[in-house]
Structures are given as C-alpha cells and as structure tokens.
Image 1 (tube, chains in turn purple, cyan):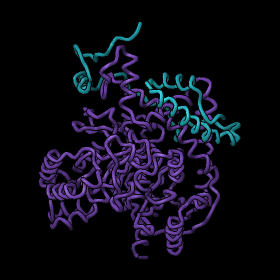
Image 2: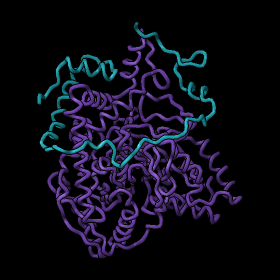
Image 3: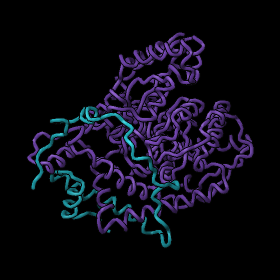
Length: 484
Length: 97
C-alpha cells in the first residue's frame, strides 16, 4: 500500500488492512516514522521517539498476527503515548526536568492492555509539565505546534498526543484528562478525544496529578477509532483501588447512526458572553443537524457553571501538592547536587526540577490544605463539587446528554497564554465540570474558524453512559460530513 | 480577601511545599497566591449549609486483599532510577538532628 494512502487510514481501517494482508505492522510503523521525519522538527509532538524499539515491536506483532495468535482490531497499529504514562524501559518525563532521566521499570495498565492487543508504541508525546496547563507550553522540553497552524498552540495538557494524531505522526494516541486535557487539545487540533467515566480506565502507571479526577482517554481520527481504543483500555484493575468493575465496555456496539428521540440539553450558561462567535455558530449548527435528524434539542439552566473553575483549581492544586511530594530527589528523578542536608536536598531538588506553573499549583494546594484554611478552602470546594454533581444529576434526569462547546475560543497563538494564567484557567470552563463530577465526555471536530483553526463540540453524559455519547458523537460526525 | 499574600505566609507555605524559592519567586508567589485565593473566594458566594463534601464521585469503599506476597523481589527495580544507592538501599544526605 502506498504510504500516503496508508497514513490516511483510521486506526480501525489500518487494523483491518493488516489483517487482510494489504499492508503490515512494519510498513505502518515505517510510514509513521517517515512522517515524523518530515514534520516533527516543526510540530515537536514527541519527547521521545523509539525508532528501533517500534520497528522491533512491529516485527514481533506481525509474526503473532501471521500465526493467528493476535486477532484484535488494533493489532499492528502504531500508537503514541502521553509522557505521563509509565512505559517500561522507555524514558517517561511528564515533560519535566524533575524526571528528565526517569526510566520506569513497569508499564501503565492502559499501556499493557494496548500492547497485549498488538498496538505498537512509537514514542512518548509532549505535554504540559505534570499535566498542569492548557497549551502544552509549560513543557520543560519546548512547546508543541498546532498542525493546522504552526503559530498556534495544540491545546493542553495532552497537546503532543492530539497534534501527533492530527499530523499523522501516529494512528491514535493516549492522553490524560483531569480538567479537559484530552478533550480540549482534541478540539484545538481537529481530532476526537474522550474522557471516560471516572474509574473506567485504570490509573495504575499514570503519573498522578489530581487522583480524584485523572482519567486516561483516547485521541483518535474519528469516533469509531475512539470507541475501539476505549474498549481495549477500559478494565477493572485490582492495582487501582478507584477502578470500577463495568459490564458494558463493548463501546463499539454503540457506533450507530441514530439520534431519534435522543434528548440533548444545551446549557444556556455555556453560550453566553465570552464564547467566540465562530465557535457558537459551529456548535449550534451541529445542534440543528441533530434536531433535524430526530433528536430533541433544548436549552436549559445547568447552574453553578461559574463556580466550577474555582472549585476545580482548589481541589486539583490540593491533590497535586500531595501527589508531587514524592518527587524529593531520593528515589528517582533529579537530585540537587549541592545540598548540605536532607531537607535542603528536598527543597533544592524540587526548586530545580519543577517549572513555574507546577510550583504555583503546589504552593496553592499546600495552602488550601494547611491547618486553619482546610475548611474554608478545600472542604468548601468539595461541597461545591457535590453541588455541581447534583446539578448534573438533575440535568440527566431530563436529558440523555449535554451538548456544548469544548473551549471558548479556537487555539490561541503560541506565547500568548502563560502571561495571564487566570485567563487560561477560565478557558477550561466547559470541560472542567465533567472531571469534578466524574462524568464521561467526548469532543469531536465540528468546523473551523476564519483562520482555519479547528472548532470542537462536546457531548457530556451521566456516569457510565459512554454508549449514549458514542452514538450521539458518531451520528453527529456523519451528519457533519454529509452537511458539508 | 487581600489581593496579596504576606511574606510570612509565603515562607510558611514554601516550607510545607518543600520548595526553596528565590526572592523574586517569593514575591511572585505572594502575588500569584493572592490572586488565586481571591478568585477561589468566589466559592463563598454559595450557601453550602447541609452539603456533604464529596471526596469521591462514585460510592467507593476501601479495596482490600489478602495480606499475601504476590510479587517477586523488587529491590533491583526499585533502585534502578536511584540518584545514589548503597547496599541495596537509597543513599541520601544526612538530615539535621
């Protein structure tokens, strides 16, 4: 198969082409590596590309496909992994100086599941440092550029993964989503991104940011791929005590083009001031297509929307300050060489290893958890979290899913966001509530703005309702394609 | 709420966070924290009387297993990324006594 045609395939199509002997795992990896040679210098999607390892893995996978041992849909398909997912024997940095030399001795469970089904890991993608950011600019290894317009960011924190999919530097990728970090870069890069219900994908081996909200999710070229990937990585894992036992992880069964009778709610608060006109137009146009296809689309008051971002940053910072305590220069990662005693070593290793945004959130988190402030800040935020969840419960009593934008704007220009962190935080407004409430959400492309930058829309569902979301997203994807 | 957090608080928090900050960083931290805390203060607008704090989104219980060793000796693996090791242990500078 010719390389250009190969690179244009979706993950599922490639898996099928490999099974039908139209191409091989090795050819697929070679095509991806050739693409990386062409575009990586500009886009910088990856922190680590494991060229030799990927080719070896592809060969061994192809042998197992040939003998009939591997029959999974994604066998032989090259995948990129966000660099906060532990990969045995492969550098895992979280885009931080702190872990610049860290090579895990085990792989994350989600990675193990992908490899067991024959996916071929190509490398580790760039991200905001320790997943803290919305533009991939806080990476200690340089920014990633948006393949649709290289002067713009890819979004974050899974910006490298989203850009790698958009640039055909892999066939699909994994990211992690704590406040929108899979869905928002998907939107900015014109690809599909999904955050499953909390507990659906094991967090074992995902280097933690905010443990009560982190979830691993797929970044893919289309909804079918997204469902296929989620089906592989979803599992109940005894090694993650927040992992949930689910009986309904056959997500590809939901790939049906049918939204008749589907009740879709549009939160009025999501479409008010601050939303870019072109984003509003694109999302509402898609809503209209869904309505014409038989869905019941209606505006409603979600309420508490303006409290989601402050609640999130309180909780996420608090949890991050706790999770990042382990980076102390003792067991792994960077150790300051000039410390006179243990305490100084801790303080200096961390000062040298962490970037500004990470320090900012650790400081805030330490404060809100400290004696005398814990009740006023952290506990209060957890109460607001409960109230937000209740607001969604009320919404899902009336609607099957909620439709809205993913971000208030398309991708900002590189260099514009970090000067105003507060403004950047507010950009998380549409994605963050799903993390607070543990809800699944999927972002799909729905148009472009006047500068050719992608616009995404998001379906959010009640806990464990991924199948409804997949059906809505799949149908919407088809409608948008036909509507063009 | 004040729009700037005081020096003493910044010192206290940096000690909790185990971060050695330069003078500029301390000044910036005071401003950044002040701004964030001001913004987070918005949550005070809500009446949270009677609301239970939500620690977990799903009803979760502690997960237990039998206290039986199921893995092999992980000593070598655990030390693989150690900046300094000695006799099968992590080596680190002395702490103050």
